[in-house]
Image 1 (cartoon, rainbow, N blue to C red):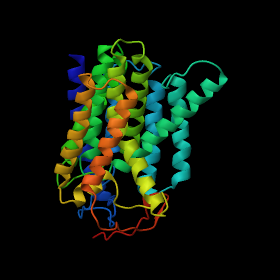
Image 2 (cartoon, rainbow, N blue to C red; image 1 turned 30 degrees about the horizontal axis):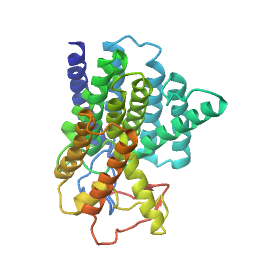
Image 3 (cartoon, rainbow, N blue to C red; image 1 turned 120 degrees about the horizontal axis):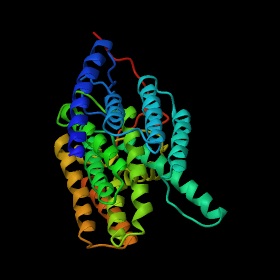
Length: 350
């Protein structure tokens, strides 16, 4: 019953908080500028991560005692949200963002969210490096993936719901509650974001937090699943839930390098851009990508594929198939950007 209340509480708080954020953004003209990569023409605020964080903080504080294991993670989430908000409003550049990602990666690592390679000094160093690298990849991967209405929020909602069920099943009740509060907050956000038109975007203040949380949830599952009889199944499910942001990040960067472009140069070669450019609406594009993710999770759940290397190969090849199937023959339009973000342009404000 507590978990149901957590979802309802988070949904209600975020529903109200997001509405108030939208009204505030309209009054203060805090809207995102448009460029050639963006399909939307309406003026929309990219502040969706702010009410999500407020909901997450209130949910963990009210519905569960603030245990020491939660405080570092909530602190890391706050840091990411704050720097993301600053970046959305001022475009602060990649150096400061990477520094913050190192800080929150260290917070997660020393709180116990890591791959757990044990042994000598070399193993510990490898564990530390891989953990921080993975968290950074997830933060940036989800940020890159947040390009059309409803996609990031929907993928995050599916992933957190499944992670919450895994944590609850195996006795990690605090993490289950944290995941469910975040799930409820995302449902509230999606009620304003999903569809052909959006009333608010997640922004860096929301997408970076999602990438961080999905990363530590996956790390925790991989860390304890090795001791379980069905550990391979759980590991593959976790892999399927976080694969898309990383694959898309690598796919886009490799494409740019092969075409002798800067990896920080914005284009329309993300998987969601390819699917929408093939003539699909935002909701239909979300559905296509979500069906692919759910199909992978179903295959792993029923044990059709148990080896994690084979599972990785299947995920990668199926992602490549999607890219090829929806690739168009036109050369993508390219515009110079500063450190991977569109250069802010004055927006006409009445």
